[in-house]
Length: 299
Ligand SMILES: NC(=O)c1ccc[n+]([C@@H]2O[C@H](COP(=O)([O-])OP(=O)(O)OC[C@H]3O[C@@H](n4cnc5c(N)ncnc54)[C@H](OP(=O)(O)O)[C@@H]3O)[C@@H](O)[C@H]2O)c1
Image 1 (cartoon, helix red, strand yellow):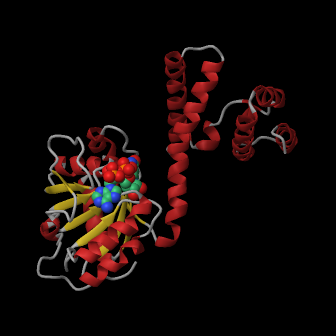
Image 2: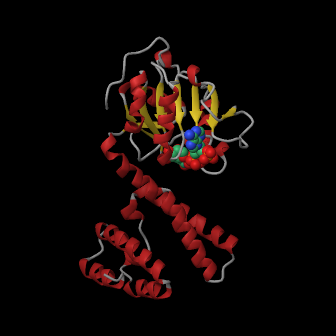
Image 3: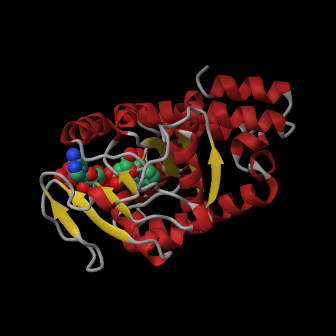
C-alpha cells in the first residue's frame, strides 16, 4: 500500500463512521447494483454517469456524456467500467481536471490494481480498488441482498482502503485487504468459483438435453444437485464433499464417459478429472487406482 496526499479542504472523511456522498461512473451491472445497495444502506448516491442514455431503476439519477455533473460534490468516485476501459476513463478524468484534493477514487475490478488510477494522485485524490466477491448480473435490484455477507477485496492507498473498508461494512460485507501483487491470482479464484461454475452447469444442462431430457427438467434436476454439492463443501470442505466415479476409483465409468463425449468436452472432462483426482488422493484414494484413473483420463 502507498500513502496518499495530504487531506484537503473537503476531505472524504470517515470521522464518526460517516461515508461521504458518492458518485458512480459506469451504469452497468456492478455500477447500478452498487448504487442501489449503497442507497439502501443509507449512503447518499449523487448519481450514476454513463456514455449513453439507457433504462435504469427509477431511484437512480442517470447523467450521460461529458463530465459527471456531481464530480465536484462527490467524496468518493467509483469507476464501474470494464477493466480494459479503466485507463481511458482515468485519462478522461485527469484531462478534465475534475478530480480534486480530498476525494477518494475507487474502481471495482478484481484483477486490475489501483495503480491504473495513479495519475489521479497528482490532483490530491487517494486511489484504491474495492472488489465485491459477488456476481451482479441482469437485475441490479438483487445486488443489495447479494452483497450482504459478501467478501470485499480492498487494495490501494491507506486513505482509500480505510474508506473502502467502511463501505464494505456498511453494505454488510466482510472486508479483506490484498496486496497489488496477488490480485490477479485472487481474481482467477473468483472466476473458478463463479463464472466457471455457471459454464459447467450450462455444459451439464446440454448433456442432459442430449440425453433426451427437456431443458426445463434438466435445469430443475441439476440445480438441487449443484446446491447439495455446495452445501457439502461448506459443511465438510472439498475433499470430504467429493463423491462420484473418481472419488470411488471407478476406472470403467470414467472411460465410458470419455468415449461418449465430443473431443472438446472430453478434453475438458480430463482437465477437470485430473484436478478431481488430486482431491481424491488427499481424501485417501490409493496410488494404484489413481494411476489407472490418470490413464483413463488420457494421460
Ligand atoms: N458484474 C459483476 O458481477 C461484477 C462483480 C464484481 C466486480 N465487477 C467489476 O465491475 C466493473 C464493471 O463490470 P460490469 O459487469 O458492471 O460491466 P458492464 O455491465 O459492462 O458495465 C460497464 C458500464 O460502464 C459503462 N462505461 C464504459 N466506459 C464508460 C465511460 N468512459 N464513462 C461512463 N460509462 C462508461 C458502459 O456503458 P456502455 O453501455 O456505453 O458501454 C457500461 O454501462 C468491472 O471492473 C468488473 O470487474 C463486476
